Image (cartoon, rainbow, N blue to C red; front, side, top):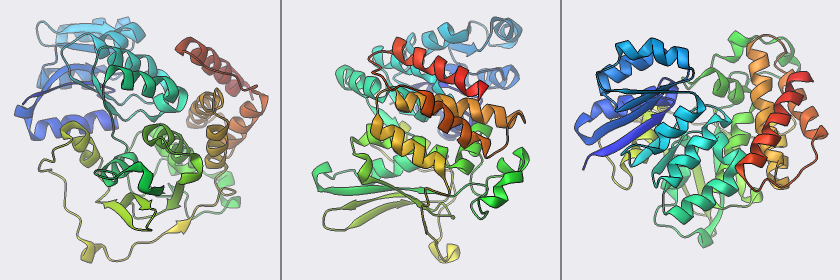
Length: 380
């Protein structure tokens, strides 16, 4: 049966790899919509190859620039309204949300309202509004299928198991670009050094988040919502090889782990084909050739961004929205050269300290808190 897809963030790392999966078995998929940010050239190329019914770009100017180069009959949308429309108003049965940051929230909720299943690669959606997203998905009877390698691993390890038998889960972390540096050595690191991830090929924002361990913090909060777990039952372990993507431990102390080479096409494909498994173009893991696997305890003093994520998650309500927004702005400032690498954690800490935690019962409240946190983070 043909699966009909819309991909939000089609020109980013996850989006392009999703299209790699589609291209491997083109008869199994039909692309309904492709949404990008500013990369009009790549979107045009994708649209001419996969022939979606509609595309979306960030601005009207880019949409008008792209329109003459698209297949005849392709609808061209733009901006936030266009993003929401392309997420909801087509025949797609699954929407892959691969937009970086909290911009994906409204579009994800619109897709859920339209009864579409979600392939979730946008962890910020659950970090900022997990209580709203998971509740509405349950009410609409749609699935939230994780694409992050760590959450996909946990999802796979829990297949056929009962949560009552679960003792805890452990998310593995590569340690990022600076895993072998001391705190003192981080003082003078450059943007170029931070963007050099040892294991994964990812976008700039997530690569910086990996180096600060904020990415793992976001994943901890996401895991809380995806699997309904207390924060005390969610652990993080540094695993430099990124072969064990995560694991679960049961009350009888049995551990089940999901292993594979670091290639995002595997969890992407599983989210698209679940509950089936299909042949993959990715290389197979040879454990004899791989040899040793290594692990290190997580040090929350070394990685304060992860500590602050745990603290924000336990506080709940608006704290996680503020954590995410402050981190997004701090990372952007670092990438622009406006602040140092260690200033990222300083910015987050200062904004969290200034924030008075409040309830966030709806998207409007979340957006208001998010906007406040971004203004604060730009100024400290």
